[in-house]
Image (cartoon, rainbow, N blue to C red; front, side, top):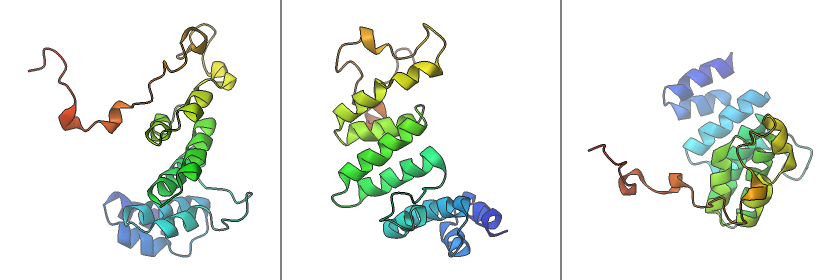
Length: 166
């Protein structure tokens, strides 16, 4: 099985071997892994082609659900002049998986605070929590209360040490 062999190569840090093993595979899981390999070896155009072979068709399904859309957003973010497409893919990823916090962080880093707030005010999020236990009570938070400056964007070397850890 090519997918299994390529997975072993990829997890062992041998992205080029995995890439060559997966070339020509059309199964969704293989296409997603191929896109990951292409991303790691900086072949962004091929990574995008692996995720969405028919770029012009809106019905062309991106494999691996929210993770696939997140990867497509990362690819668009690193491509010249594709910020709007990146925000759209990150938004789609969050719509599919509201717990994919890294997609929210990416939207914030791209400066799309309006889109980030709209996603956090999604009424469908209420169905994920038992009554009265929602993690984000947007009615009692003022606009702009959800910070759009994720800590992940601060390098570890610049983060303050917690008190009493020295």
